[in-house]
Image (cartoon, rainbow, N blue to C red; front, side, top):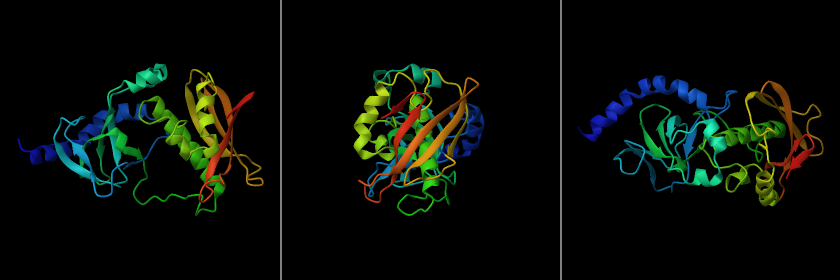
Length: 264
């Protein structure tokens, strides 16, 4: 059988794969419905492409390619498959010893489908969607809400082995003050509880990130992450402001507040 015929077979079976995997993929997402709507290629040189392979590994033939900056990709599944319970029980050493992650992806038009190395994927945006940045947007409270929501999404992906820790470089640079990155990593390791839920065990429902009614005060933005954990209402506070040490002064998280303690 030729590679071309195999490509056609993969494309024709995509709808069936989505149906068969739909339940497990849905369960793998954060249970309040949060999760990346789309993915994009990252870490590929502008004069190169991301190879799409017939199976999850470099021993499989290349059957197509995504552009170095391709966006709007949809994720069908990834291997190794790790449940939330397994992930939370893993140590950093356990995660480091896992095989390299490979993901079955399709483009926005469902014209290309195949396996790519997970290290070349990051959260992206749907075709036609717009991203408001602190450098150009006027709704700084809205930007802050989106940042905290993204932190929760990446945290959940990290627990499932699908992303890097948002508390360590390079990911932490997207969320926290540049001067606090070292303190953040140390504080989280010594916290003894999940830093976003103030708990060791979690069964999170109905996560919602809402602005403090007082709005932005002298550049300080306060948000609340509200959710239930094992049926009990919980609330975690976030203080954010512009990091003036960076070009464009982007909004960053300066403090996460729990009952009785805070980080960093």
